[in-house]
Image (cartoon, rainbow, N blue to C red):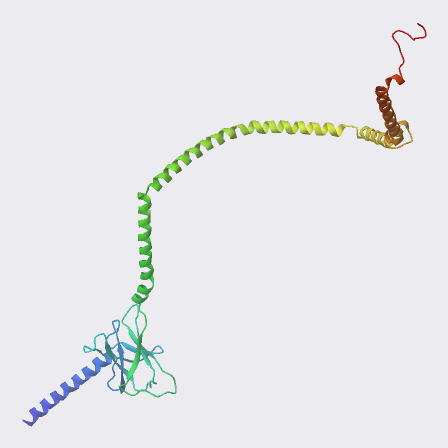
Length: 295
């Protein structure tokens, strides 16, 4: 009987030990070491971005704990309390923050930001300040998606404007004017082509004219410049002699006395003619019947 009790007791102890080892191993795999003492802190969030139990809690990139529990506040909708299980060696000053950081791949994690150094320390069970970094979807919603939405609105407005232009008569008038302008340009092009055909003959005339100018220049170069200079000198000497008073022509052209004498002569002739008209008997004596003495 005693041996049976001892055997059952051993079996019970083995089962309890196996169960304890199983619980410890399961928590250890989750990152919870039941043999190491920890401190519990809380943080309140309005959005946890998919944070789950056993998510890591890091400080400066090093894991210092994990998320022990996430509790939804049913009496205060829109608020969640996250229980943080941190290493008891970590001392958190007042003002420390727990921030949820969303990863592009994988689950979010909690990042600790320590408060000012030298201040009062938080005690086990205190509540940390909370925050969250914008996730990829937040950045898309506030950045690219907002730009895309604005672009879609502008595209819709542009399409509406284009539709209004297409339906208006101004577009048809513009197309008619463009067609007319195109025909006129085509006619101008034909005339230009016709004019360009005449360019070679014009160039030939220009070449002929250039040759004539060249011949004229050659003939000018062949003129006896010595004879030309001699002729110019003779003309200059003649001009000098006409301007001087040592010759007859010079006296005739330059002496004022000749002009004065001619002027006086003209005045005398005018006076004589005037006196002749006024007193003709002074100068002319005649009788048709002869004198009385002869009778």
